[in-house]
Image 1 (tube, rainbow, N blue to C red):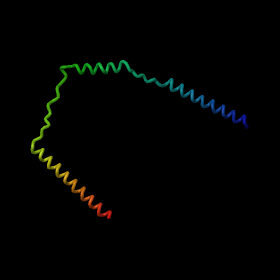
Image 2 (cartoon, rainbow, N blue to C red):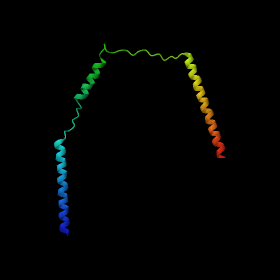
Image 3 (cartoon, helix red, strand yellow):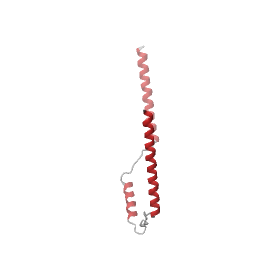
Image 4 (tube, rainbow, N blue to C red):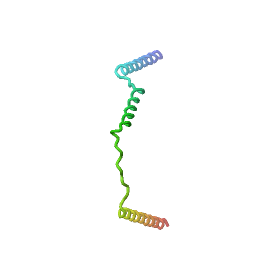
Amino acid sequence: MLGWIVKQVIISLVIILLFHHIIVFVTNTFTQPKIIDLVNKPTETYEDIYKTLHKDEELIPPPEVSTKLPDNIKQDMQLELQEYLNDITSNGTEAHGTEATSNK
């Protein structure tokens, strides 16, 4: 009985090791290692950026943007904001008032 158990353990270990080595062999044979260029690629990228920064003829200044609004639009916006804030505060006090009465 003990001999049979030892025999089964040895056979199982051999099969596991065999499959392990087959998988390692296949992965090493059929995959290509990923090579990362940490020297030349960043240098080329920085050179491209440097070249684009120093091209005077292609640089165009940004257009002037006006942020001034007409007075009537400003007043309309202020009135709308004030109405919204008043609506929120009136709804907020009503909600708190109903909760206070329902809790009593």
